[in-house]
Image (tube, rainbow, N blue to C red):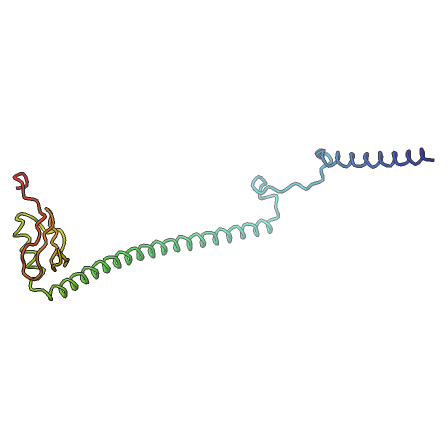
Length: 188
């Protein structure tokens, strides 16, 4: 009896394995052209237009024309949008340049106003300090506008020239420090 059960189980397992192998083989093997049941896809580029019904061909042509018109309209809208973006970027850059120039002008005006307001408290003006520095260093040129500074505890104008820096006392107009280099014969 035990042999009979073993034989039945062996037959059942063998049958099961054979069915699985056949199914895998069918799935792996490609179908032959004679057994293929797929419908061929119509290729409109190689098929002459006379093979289609004239009403269908007219619908296809109308759809194609409509598509081409919509495509052309969309392309035109994209080109117009790109042109508008380019103009907007140009305007943005121009406004940014104007803003930077205005900020620089405002900063320069504020510096001038501060220098004038501060120098009004002293006997020597910015112009007088500049003149004194240029006389002290003949042949020099002014590099930056004079600023008020403290030199050894005294209020002084710091005048930056191309040959060095000179400090002019803001109350007396005297030269407190002359850091300029003398002009050489090659500079003339």
